[in-house]
Image (cartoon, rainbow, N blue to C red; front, side, top):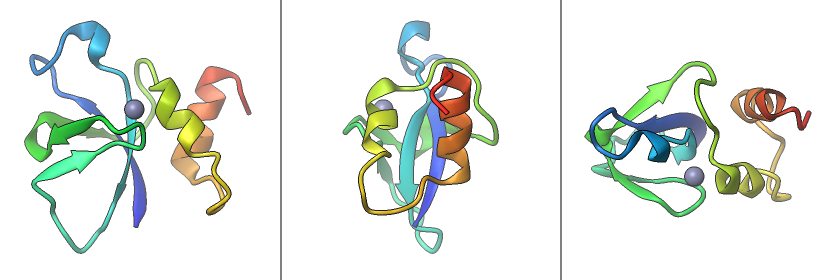
Length: 86
Ligand SMILES: [Zn+2]
């Protein structure tokens, strides 16, 4: 599983709804739908993945990454830095 940052593509939701969500994704499988850590579900084709933090991170996704299951990933750290939490 890898942690990816992604947000809804332009036009699929309102601009205000285009928060950057975090997704745990299996590299070996291309799912038809994606569920963010916060529980938001998207069609695979409606999500654009980001190599860097852009726009507003989803607060709920951020808090869900601090569970004790593992070390924060690089992407999570970047998001936290963007929010001044690091
Ligand atoms: Zn989210």
